[in-house]
Image (tube, rainbow, N blue to C red):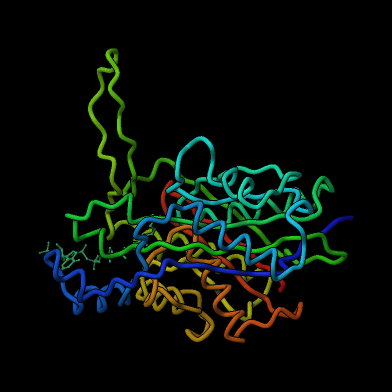
Length: 319
Ligand code: ACO
């Protein structure tokens, strides 16, 4: 029987820091509003790097940390809703940059749940015995999908990438998993531009992210909390919960609803904003780097993603 484990973690964010104060100079907002409503104080914004550039940095770091050669990788999955292009995929660009000639590569789109969905998918490749090791990366340049005249969304997001090296193990590290989608629920959309087409008779689609923040907030508090609680009731209490980083108030309320100490809910959206599919692996990588989460095989981590689709999903992993 084959099992999978996370053996290395890495993250990379663009250099440019944009503070709430900076945003208040270009739109009708304030540090007071943004930090009190969301907890966000600054975010990283790409000044030219593409999503694949961020993902490639993470991939190189993972290879360096593991000591594996690129040729040893069997797969590269990139969770993103802001790919450089639909074709080639961001993952294919990473594969080319690494020279990972034996790896198949594809992108997975599940918005802010993307990393959790990709990790669940990758684990199955190893569990089935068809793959030995590979990379799972969440990467976004969300700044290019935002309407910078819309203060309701532009202040919330940031750019970044994080990822893990997943490899075969003799023992079980994936203790529980449950993924969900409810495509009937709206409130979070990111359109595609319509190309000039002489036969097209539909209406133009807004290419930018639009969000009914309050509806998503309520959904998260109610539905995602319930799903996390259900997993904990069956599989036991985690040492830490790494939830998608959208809003500090969501973490505060969810901690109460789930009934676990707030200190178990790690947070870094203060510095990065909402980085969509990248938020959970960036949070994981930072907390491994600062010693909060030692990779010693004993840390029970509950990863929980939620966002557009609507999608949400939880994985309890031993690291
Ligand atoms: N600066 C100043 N004022 C603002 C800003 C801003 N940046 N944005 C909105 N406002 C104003 C609004 O216009 C409104 O004013 P009004 O009352 O005069 O109309 C007021 O502030 C309150 O707006 P709300 O939208 O009701 O504010 P709320 O407290 O709900 O906070 C927020 C909004 C932060 C978006 C919150 O609802 C939230 O975090 N929602 C969840 C988002 C989320 O979890 N997304 C997950 C996934 S994202 C993905 O998958 C891509």
